[in-house]
Image (cartoon, rainbow, N blue to C red; front, side):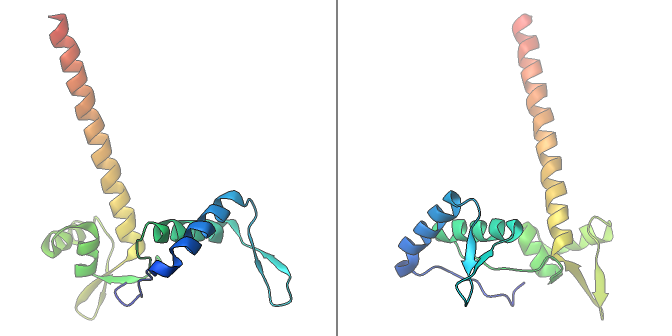
Length: 145
């Protein structure tokens, strides 16, 4: 992950990126033009990735493409989750995230960190929804009394 380049739009490209984004949103079946001027359709999965990349770049955000099976160090994964490395190691020890060893060092796959992040976020949302429901129910009961 750290070895991947971050691509940032240059100021001079701003108008071109805005126009490309607009065209991508309008076009139902975008295509590339091959060397012999033949039209090469862009598969939907690649179209969706390109649309995301263009969208981020038009917001001035840097973009990096990383395969989901990219190996991360425990520090890289902890940084990604916004937690300390010792806390992340505890997650590994609790089998919250799969890992493997390279020599004596633990490594995790980006895909597994993303999966954990999705589960964690879903759990947080569920708990907040329950708390909000309890607060509303308590308010309704208090108004009845």
